[in-house]
Amino acid sequence: MIDFKKLRVWEVSHQLTLQVYKLTSTFPGEEKYGLVQQMRRSASSVPTNIAEGCGRGSDAELVRFLVISMGSASELEYQILLAKDLHYLAGENYEELNEKILQLKKMLNVFIQKVKLRQSKP
Image 1 (tube, rainbow, N blue to C red):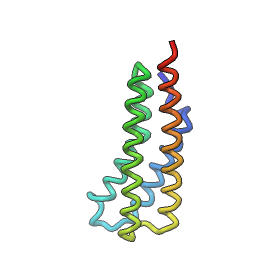
Image 2 (cartoon, one colour):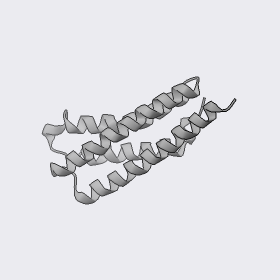
Image 3 (tube, rainbow, N blue to C red):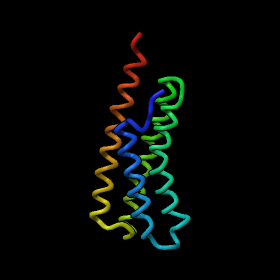
């Protein structure tokens, strides 16, 4: 098992989630159970799945949960674009979030590849 709190990728995803929660608190009230909830779930799913994968007993399961995290990051990538296009998210906030999501996806990809490499070694 791996202590997820010591992973840089988990910390980045946790900070991104906090930022998404803060920014979505300014969205229109009618989006509380729509886009706000979707964005928060997608954002929080990333560190949640990293944590769950780290608590599992095998590298194969860790990879599976990291791939789920990647999917959630991709969902969030689209949702922030939608929020920008609906004028709920300012352009500069969109750019900052998008850059963080892209960085996070790169980090997840590297982590996935490292775990897969470790799996393949005897």
